[in-house]
Amino acid sequence: MFDVAIIGCGPVGALAANLLGREGLNVVVLEKELTHYPLPRAVHIDHEMMRLFQSAGVLDRVLPDMVDTDGHLHVGANAQAIRYMGTVGMPRPFGWSNDWFFYQPELEEHLRAGFADMANVDFRKGAEFTALDQSDGPVRITYTQDGAQHQVAARWAIACDGSRSPVRKALGIKLDDLDFEEPWLVVDAEVDGPVRFPDIAGVPEQADLQRLSVMMCDPKRPATIVPGRGNHRRWELMLLPDEDDAAMMAPEKVAELLAPYIGDVPHKIVRSATYRFHGLVAESWQEGNVFLAGDAAHQTPPFFGQGMCHGCRDVANLSWKMAAIIKDHASPEILCTYQPERDPHVRGVIGAAVNVGRYICELDPAKAAARDAEMIARAEAQKGKQETAHDLIPAISTGIIHRGSAGAGERFIQPVLTDGRKLDDLTGGGWRLFTLADAAALPDGGAVSAWLAARGAEAVMIRPDHYVFGTGTAEELRKAYAAQMGLSLETAA
Image (cartoon, rainbow, N blue to C red):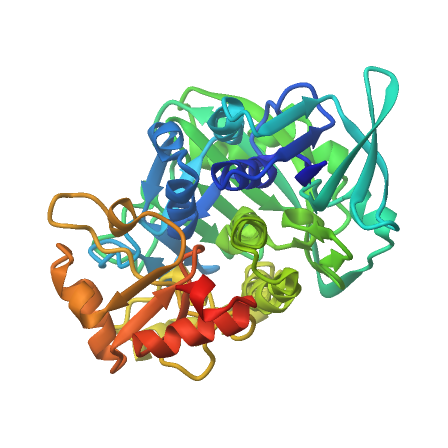
């Protein structure tokens, strides 16, 4: 019997396999397709995912095929900048740029290569899930492969099988509809030159439009222009009422829509597809020993590029807890904190994305003009305070944290060391405890010492997913850790 069965091997499932495999757990990965999906879908991740790639040991594989960019710009109906969330010249407290773009087929290939040589990870391609049963304890998964029916058993299963999730449907789990659904056309292209933009008033001097996600909040047709790695570019164009999906995907229509941005620049359309941008969250993310992750658990409008990020956070959360149960004999009850920790986080970001989506998708010219005036006035009032997208990510407020202590639930910083490495390269993963004396000895320019001082803390304990467990004295933190993990103090030490 395996420790964990992962159903679905897109980026989220593949990251889970890497994280669990590095912990030494016995893992089986079931993927219904024989090869990874050949076209781009997700394109953006943030600094937190780059840090998870560090943890998973795949950073050297993925980094050469990624590009960091400079944030987001929202442009109003009259070609006026109305919101700027840029990162040029700003500090990078977590060690990485905030916005990274990639080409999904490459990323999936790299993530799969990361666990390919792990003897404890069994990857079964062409294995299509059909049913599961956990009435006698283990999760028994039935799947078809090569025309035959097979079964595999695992202590736990993680369903990373996408928005249509057969596992979620088999479990009868319903989705909570957050009341956002808008039809958009998504076009990916290889463009051998810069993208054209209209003359936009109010763009900050440091902003480079070619290195920003530019959201054209134009009631004539809202659109987003997304940079990518190499010559890959993406357009997301809202479909207007009564427009037909098939007609809008026709090559001649796609060419017409992209013409203002491309002109005569040589380019090749990679794909065009219509989507309904949704805000949906599963009512339950856990059924017995089966857990939903990624799009199987939630679907986020793409306006901040957090869809795949949510899924990566999901499996990082599950992976360290499963490893603690298997390796350290922590209480299995710690897995009951999965949804309480992740659900409020996801809903907070989805809520922000839905709010942004509503004003981006405004089609009434008068309402769009009022929106623009209000946002320009707000930006003026906040002048000097630069907003970034990572400000939207809330702290963990419940679960395995030392509640009431300063900084509990925050993402912990990752300063760059004096030798050019990042903090996690020095300390490794797992649980980490920094006292004031430890912090003073770090070659990090005093960043951890300053973090502790700002919170009036003697010590900080960090979870394996890089969130702060809590602050206090070292002894206080050890006791709180042991109690929440279901360990004795001797074992916890």
